[in-house]
Amino acid sequence: MSTTPLLSVRDLTMTFPGRGPRAARVRAVDGVSFDIAPGETLGLVGESGCGKSTTGRMIVRLLEPTSGSVTYDGRDITRLPQRALKPLRRELQMVFQDPHSSLNPRRTVARIISDPLLVHGSSAAEARRRAAELMELVGLIPEHLDRHPHEFSGGQAQRIGIARALATGPRLVVADEPVSALDVSVQAQIVNLMERLQAELGLAYLFVAHDLSVVKRVCDRVAVMYLGRIVEIGPKDRVYGDPAHPYTRALLSAVPLPDPAAERARERIVLAGDPPSPAAPPPGCTFHPRCPKARDVCRKEPPPLRITAAGEAREVACHFPETGPAPGDGARGQDASGGSGRDTP
Ligand code: SF4
Image (cartoon, rainbow, N blue to C red):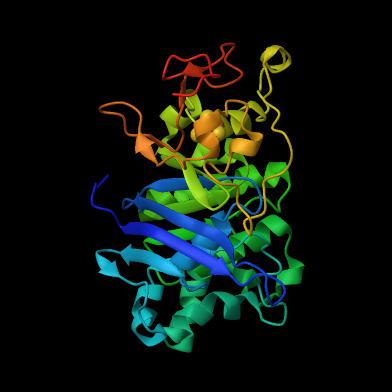
């Protein structure tokens, strides 16, 4: 896998106007940075409202960032006018969460899949021939091209959404919760399909999801978001096997374990309350009101995202990152600082 990024996101920020004339602006995404290499999958996880889907939409320019930059294949595309962006849209595509609502119910599948090709100059005959190939590629019957979306199940509709995304031969696909609207058995089929397509076509994915088990299966690296910021990012084995941020540990402690005995024995970390409003984020570390490890400094100083040890590929935004196996492995983590978790440094 090449180490030159296909995508570089730097200090990406999105603020929305608050409700009411005097309402504060809502900072939905607050300085997010990461890279994705060609052929790599980065999982972007976090609770609902953490800003992960907004981040994905800014990357494909469905939303205009308030600040920061998106560089694709060495080219800054953040402020490119739509006309200049058009050739790049072939390479940067998106798969949406709810397959049925993302497909126009009045159009045939042939038209839905062909549209991006027609926009990019293919003839109608070429586009239809390619649409039939894509149906086959995603495991659907090409003879069903003239059907409408409502004639397909949820899983089949998501296959159509994937075929549409692949029509122009993208190199990067932003998949926004691509399986969360599907039954569990169908989720596995779609994940299998996405993995096969990645292997066959060399695709890179930004896989946005709240389900950590799904992300663990598909991603090479994972970024955990909380209240618009990345709090932990690194190789999958490091983040899942040795989570360093208390929020990551809490999320992982809620993932069901396949072994019933291990599931009964493991310790769950239950966070207090709901995430604060992004319109009024807490000072210091924004996780501090819910963090079981919070100390005085956490309430005053925001922790930067940084590596925790020399040679470490994982970065953590915490004053007191933990070490040790993931919750559920039968061992509690300890502060990397060696502290008791109560004193102020
Ligand atoms: Fe918890 Fe403090 Fe780390 Fe924030 S900085 S996650 S409050 S220990």
